[in-house]
Image (cartoon, rainbow, N blue to C red; front, top):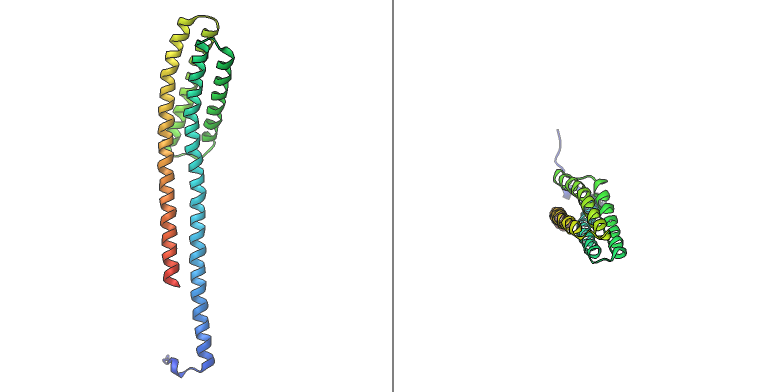
Length: 194
């Protein structure tokens, strides 16, 4: 049925055409592999950027709580203006980062941590505000009691924010490893096709 075709039976023009087609196919496959690899690495780069932003936000949340704790100390020392300034600044940073986390798609663990941060920070705000107000009104005993409660809650907030930071950092490192693996795999495929 099918007759075998030997390359030696082909004319020069047919051999050149066949060689051109084979080279064109190899270039096409190499280009497709490279294009696909670059697309995967680009996607991973976007995920890495998002994860790096999350790591930064979690760090900022810890620093914001420390700023609010500092505000309570200023209130106890009688510097209400500085206390209110620091407290508001810390609260604004914490709330902005919290809202940013809440607007993103989160894993189950991330969602639990963010939910815990939200509820604990709400309680923290109530206690810390009471400490500052008590200090401003001269009731130092109540201010110290509330400051101690606020410190406990602040430590809890910082621990949860650190846990969130560590979770995000681990995810970031996974994405970097995946991007490296994809890059290396694509390079080897390109080298093999070349």
